[in-house]
Image 1: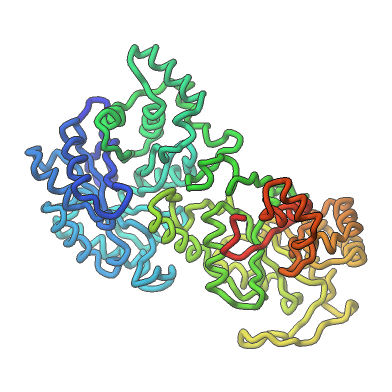
Image 2: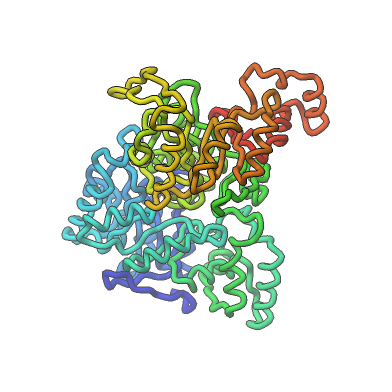
Length: 576
């Protein structure tokens, strides 16, 4: 092992090299490529190798290790339980041992928290990741596994796991790099004695820090101080080890393999350059096929945020999740899945839409898409996008006006979230006794003077802010008259008023009133309907052609209302 590679101790007492070789070859299989890469790496001094059943190359990795002549005790081998073996980790382990041709595994990880039986199972379906973990604990008694750990687990999932676990995972392997440092997750893992391991520690070949002038200057400065070449890649890997993570960069190039093994103690100033990189303007915290081409944008478009009167920030473009009729859960699943993948971080829904899916389930679907593409993986998949980066709006339905707390709790349960960013009163009218056994009925629309009035309901909604389960509250479909009545009695001014706004119905007077009261106007239906006249209007078509083609006619409408808008599209056109 190179003298420049630290050896760290796991909570089991076992030691592991802080730098290993990731053996994912970019596609399933590649056994011969993996064999040649591991054989070369062993010759250069690598003693830590990370593979997985899903990679389809355990045989090549194991063959290179066996043929090296290096004592098995000097090599640390990590492999992973595939999601379709969650019902029997023992079966998964035996399959890996047979493929590797080894007597034992140094570290066996649960690759993902989600199980798969032809489809990705929901978080509450058996086997849950807790059930799988308890079965993995038993493998320690077989002598065929020295340590067990997890991969792609969020803080929430780790907390759930630790409540039932008898053995604390030794590591949590997740995506970590300067664009996506996951500081909170790392701090949490450390507090529990779990060592963070970074896959994709260098991001991808288009990672912006490879050509960043600041990184290049820092590498040149350090090169002069050390009287030898230092590359931006070495800065990144050295930063990762110095901050207390194990890293598993992948390369089959001899020169880069040597560089990756050469860990440098960074001076404080250079460490801070790398450590603060994600805070720079336009930096995204995940790497995917869109964001790295133009950092700070989604699909080439900049998405600004604005501040509500509460101080909370909201992306000015979100995704409306009304699917044209109540229900349609699979359609809503697909649209949110695609939108998250592309880069949307603001979602607008409501109980009446009848399309809630658990947050974990949605992001589990994202994981499946990325696994099929095998590029641009995001971090921990059922919170791989940190909750703090997603803005969720939902709405109080009219038959819960008598008890907004009840409505909120129902929404939180269906969404499987701990809090809502923005909770809106969907309509000013109450309609009690209008839902029975999940079947929608018209019920009775209450007159404005009948209790609960929208003022009564609003005063109850204000109390929800004290629960910590709601960050901001607002209204929807409120007229100028209704807003004036509400503000006379309200202790808290609504953060937003969501109404229909588009070129055919701009509602200038209402928007102006909202602005004067510090209420953010949000436009639903910002593109009208599919037959909206401005889609075929000659002037709009001419203007869009001048800007960039006929596909830009919708962009004109959205851009004109960007300070108001909450855009909506189906999963086929969320990028546009």
